[in-house]
Image (cartoon, rainbow, N blue to C red; front, side, top):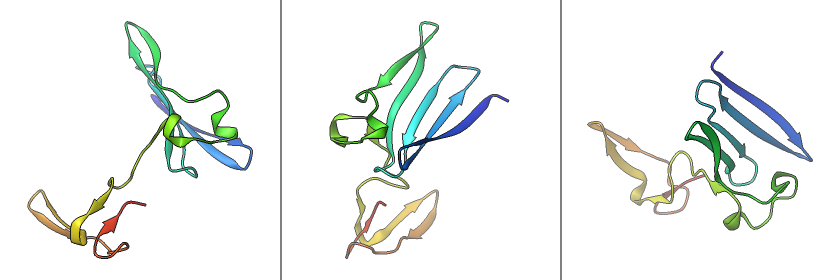
Length: 105
């Protein structure tokens, strides 16, 4: 199997590790803390090299999220004015959870 997903309990939190065996690409995400991607390794010159940095053992004691990793804002970053957008010729209306807009999370 090319792709693997593994979970790891780190204190009271769950870390998700994703790995692509074919390319060596890997990522570690802490969903309970802003869906923070705190480890990303991509193949460069034949080796998996760290692209995203976080302090050692950050997942066990997350702090200072602005200096460790990067949040994956899903399904969209920031706000959508009026919660309305058009994509691929279709109209979409999102719930307005931060009036008068839709906000991620």
